Amino acid sequence: MRAVIVAAAVAFIISLFGTPVAIRVFTALKAGQPIRAVGPASHQGKKGTPTMGGVAFIVATVLAYVAGHVALTTLPSQQIAQVQPTMTALVLLGLFVFCGAVGFLDDFLKVRKRHSGGLSAKGKLLGQLLVGGGLGVAALYVPSTNGQTVASEHISFIRDISLLDVGKVGSVIVFVFVIMSMSNGVNLTDGLDGLATGASILVLGTYALIGFWQYRHWCGDINYTGDYCYEVRDPLEIALIAAAAAGACVGFLWWNTSPARIFMGDTGALGLGGLIGGLAMATRTTLLSIIIGGLFVIITMSVVIQIISFKTTGKRVFRMSPLQHHFELAGWSEVNIVVRFWIVAGICVAIGLGLFYSDFLRVMG
Image 1 (cartoon, helix red, strand yellow):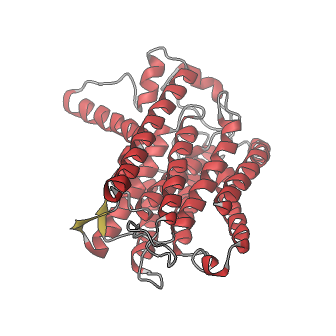
Image 2 (cartoon, rainbow, N blue to C red; image 1 turned 180 degrees about the vertical axis):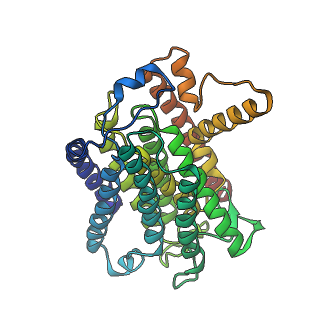
Image 3 (cartoon, rainbow, N blue to C red; image 1 turned 90 degrees about the vertical axis):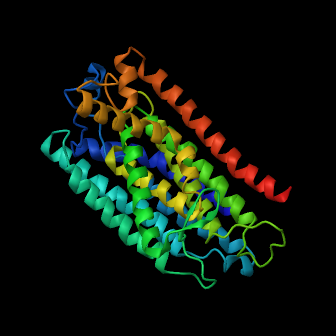
């Protein structure tokens, strides 16, 4: 637990004091966020706000991960052996960094062109596909000494569903789909000051709790004598990385909340979505992540519904999609939308955690 707390605290401090540095740097580089002419008129006042802020919390998370492992040097040697830097860390941090890199390229092109259209949709999806595919192969084909892989060959809910064995190739495909879906879901949720950041904190905090709970009831722990254990790989690594990312986002939110001094950009949104998708696969909670990340799912579906409705009937269901902009055009203030959507995100993670823990109680009872 000490290492998880250290990682979260270090990430928070680095992000809190590092984000102003990023603000000054990106302002000096004139890396202001281009604003679309189509959309709520209030957004035009945000023109010129520096973007690419995701760099700050991605760097903070990686540094905090290192700090967390420094804290582990005080543990007994047999415990240290279980939590050395692993393939799990490589996959999760790789998703965070490289999905963020795809977003950074998109942000860079927007800034360079002085236009809200950056990397093409196909280019963005191709980048996500390459990152997800490469790390998906690592997650499925590189086992630890006890035979466990980062991801599973089964579709999972709260744990693997034995009847849904899709094999390694199928699991890589599922892995890519989850990463792409979650990264685009967080990206669509971004757009109002602090909205995606706050929702991501809730989801990441939930996965920190799930990872630590799995560590305390881990089948791979030779000292664990309980009747119920989780067949996952490196759960303490999962908890440490999720807590570090959550702490980094809290520090970033100080500067990203309304009125935002900096935007996370696609750099942060795609990175966070990739990490959250990876956490879902690593904790064997793939289907449960639909509930835990319920706000991202709802907002994504609002876009899907809008597109289908317009293409089939020529009519729009919402004034504008994603959903948060519908409520802006309906007259809600930005702060009201953000806080109420955070409440929805909080309800979703509470339900997800409740289902996760109820499964433990069911088996133990």
